Amino acid sequence: MLRCTRNIHITLAGRLVALGVLSVSLLACAGPFAPARPTETPTTIPFRSRVLAVAGGSTETVEVAASAGETIFGWFEVRGEKAEIDFSVQGPDGSQVVAKNRYSGRYDFSFRARAEGNHKLIFDNAFAPVEKGVLVSYKISPAVAAR
Image (cartoon, rainbow, N blue to C red; front, side):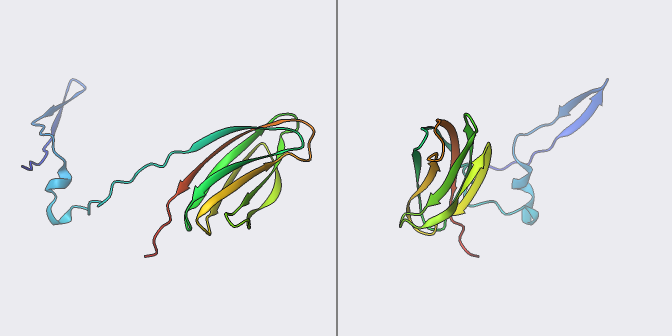
């Protein structure tokens, strides 16, 4: 059974008092002027995080499984002496999705998966003799259908 909410508010000595409150949404009673209700409840996609220790002269990789059309976005932060690292992304077929560049501190990234499979986030510290700490956080946004 649907009931409309009717709230009557009065102020007595600076305090708001509600009278005649029934707890059902007004949207249910708005008739033809009610906004369309979504057919699906949106879900929040959580970030996934990893902490990497990238030794001097070496490379660490984070694999991200994604389907074609999905968007992977996130950020990483480099810590350590002269906090910089080379970052690139490789597609499942070995193609370069994000070109290799050197970054310091925090860097935000995003790219669209061109093919289904594991995409590699590559953190390359080959140029430095000292270890770097990298905190990487990312999430995958589903592909959006064309309208």
